[in-house]
Image 1 (cartoon, one colour):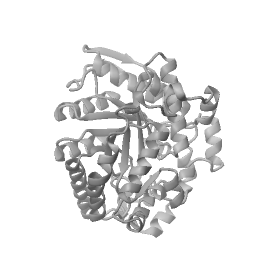
Image 2: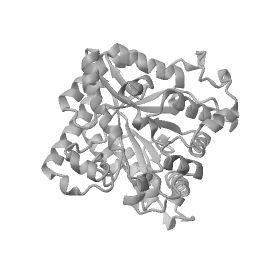
Image 3: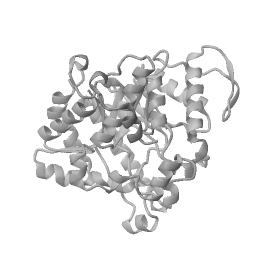
Image 4: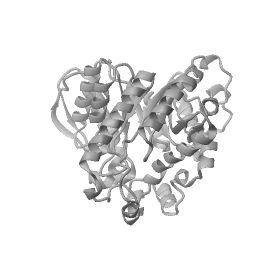
Length: 403
């Protein structure tokens, strides 16, 4: 199992009354609440923590969101460049670039290829649709989101692998000629990751053999999504996918005592609170299929963000406790889902740098050795998530996944 350090680099100094008046921290928060000096200090602090995580043996993840006080990473590729400059050994997962919200897929292909070339092949490339609220800062039509995602992906992969000048006349993108320099260091291209849980996206990811990432799902929801992937891949004639094709992101904090871990770990709840959206941003017309749009209007989406602290721990979304307890949680996550990559959000909100550093050091010393071997012998294991051992009817899998 590979372990990744991650923070969204939030700006935790927005006054509570401003957050309440604007119904959250995303998209509609006036930037007068941003102090450039504090912002500079935050960036240096966050990059220092990435550097420490790299030294301790973690891989690293960056992402991007826009016009949001909860995320100061405005470009995943810029963040990756900053992290690569500070680190030497860990792989840098760019998860990810929201393809429908970038005007030029060719520019994305160039940026990822550059990062891969400069780093000597330390890049894992994540493509995402972009969360529904990103429709506002990108000003893209949400109806075309999935179509644009697929076409942009196809164009980028062609640009990396074609080896010759070509033109592209698609529905959403048009280029008279394309010839990306440099080519990626990793051939034919860096490993591709995709995050999402919709049936269409999971099946598309499985047919391509990419790594699928589930963000903050319960044990059961994550197992269902991964099961759908495994069945789709095997039905498409691929070998049974191993743990290296599955990733999961959880919120994490360890401390020497359970009391201390929970006291500090509660600060991670900031991430769930900061994701609160106005109704229009939560379900822009056309982004979801009709059934999911109805569920959003009825308040049935985003249930995880309404769960209690204790329920989140029980569901495996919060990995919080002593090293032994968190190691046991990770073992349970693997046993139930077969995940091979674990992305750890080790910082949120107003957690101090000392709290993050103490956690990273303790995790690396006492948890990491107990979990990194998970999945190494998966072919000989008799686990419930293996395709041969899965007795769940196909229709039950399809109907339980988000459509």
